[in-house]
Length: 184
Image (cartoon, rainbow, N blue to C red; front, side, top):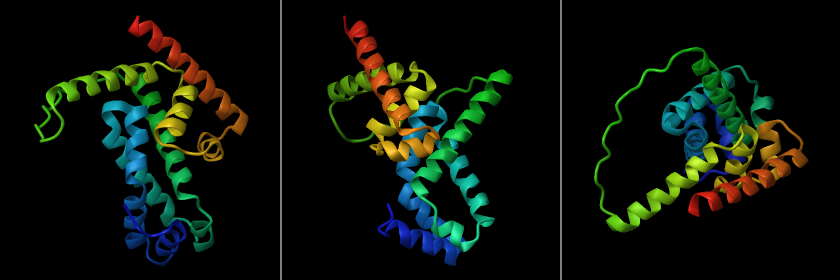
């Protein structure tokens, strides 16, 4: 993660796109990947990479004042969500090819029981979140997984703040309802 403040990262981009962009990636790669994982699932790495590629291409055409006026996190998440929506739209028009999953490497860490319990809970919650309507899913992930403020979510989703609050509230209510049905 970059130790530079947001304004310094933007100034670095305006001064030297390549070096500054590396700082932008370092500062935002975790949040971009986290949202990509929750909305895009298994394609999260590709989705995050495509987001940064599109951001870099866009920045090449920006003048200094436009770069300095950016809100990088909101801007990157908007690019990410638009890229995801485009991929979903494209995938719905073409048949998907099934690829074998690679086995995961064993790493030292928590006990097997803790991993299984945690993984089952995460899978259950991830499955429930995935079944939410798009607007609710994106709002819940951005608010409660990523921790963005409502105003920033509204900017990313390009909807009024009241709509964000409604999506989050209804999404959480639906999650509670679905979880209660799953547990019983």
